[in-house]
Length: 92
Image (tube, rainbow, N blue to C red):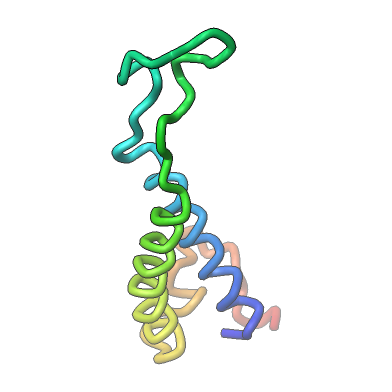
């Protein structure tokens, strides 16, 4: 695994976790009953984005480290995941 591959893997894990975490625990102005004029009812009261980004980063590191260790150990390779045999080993 290259440095670029490791960074891309971390970014994919991080963004997927962020998209899952953003709506969790979200309270809207419609839920609170405080939607005023010019303020849509679907706007968040307090999204706590900074806190969610911190937790997503911690969770991503916890998921990323074992994945990188598994890939670097050689137990799983690209050829193992090639279920349709579209990658030819002799092509490299």
